[in-house]
Image (cartoon, rainbow, N blue to C red):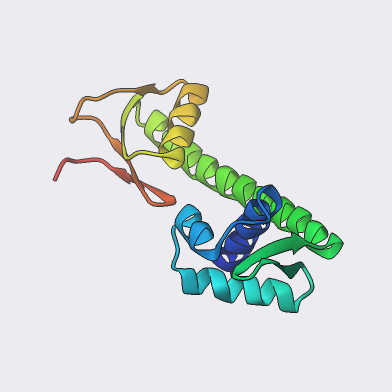
Length: 157
């Protein structure tokens, strides 16, 4: 069973190869932010499964060709990725709504958001939707964004 990191690497590799069949493993590693060995391992897997073919373009240059099976795999990986992102969005949104409902029941209508990125953006959108003001004041309850989770912090440490 593939984990989500492997699937994401394979999706990224298939997309990069489709865009530029003459891309080198070193270029792929740089673009994906992984080691060349990781790219090599994933490429060998994709080749062994029949998703990618390798042709020699020049004496020391390879060309990677995505097979029809590889195109189908890329489509499947894309759909899986989108489904996972929507699940994450719904989970975070539900958690933030629960926190905001609890705060609103206590008469609190303002929160601070600590953190950056997509999860913090989901928090902001949910606050807007729920009629809760987002403030920078430090004496308000804080939605603390840590990686892919959100926690309520009610007092400053």
